[in-house]
Length: 107
Image 1 (tube, rainbow, N blue to C red):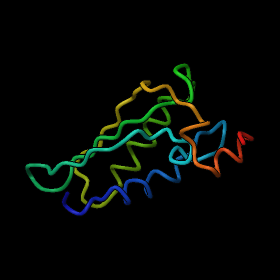
Image 2: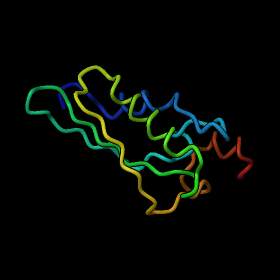
Image 3: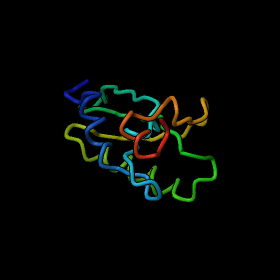
């Protein structure tokens, strides 16, 4: 993986917040997974799969761009891509962290 770890990816994405809810994309459970591959010329290619709180999220393009920029800034990342997915549909009751559920009043 050329030094890029999933822990690094999570740490890079944690500061990225949904601007309406003001909770991290990671804590909301909007990150569905990541793939790290070695780039032929060295470094890593990172592909992130994430979703939005709703398909009509007005901040969708901005959130995708912020997540991509956070990944691209990681040392050793040659290319970062973010893929949007809506399957499974986001459900904060099962996907959000306990802290996010508490902030959202879901207990």
